[in-house]
Image 1 (cartoon, rainbow, N blue to C red):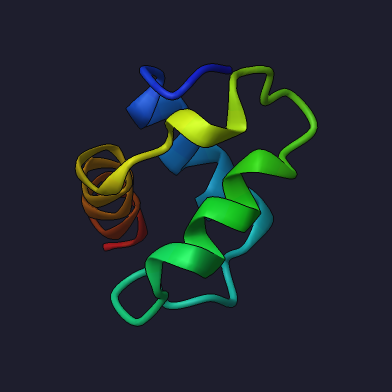
Image 2 (image 1 turned 60 degrees about the horizontal axis):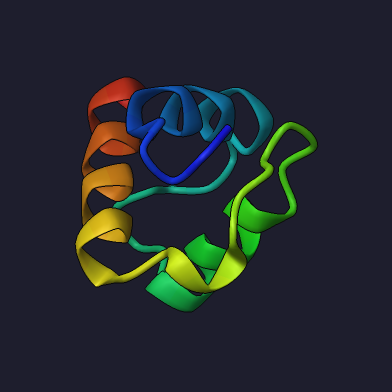
Length: 64
């Protein structure tokens, strides 16, 4: 996975961290969860605020 795989990342987060409410997670924690995903292979420094917002929103949509 790369940062551009917003939907896939959100689905994986939902599957792996169903106990976490994506509405309340801060961006630092979200970033850390993403970069530690087993299939994530991208530059860890490229996960900016806009990408994290998109992933968080997709995760919220996935969780609903």
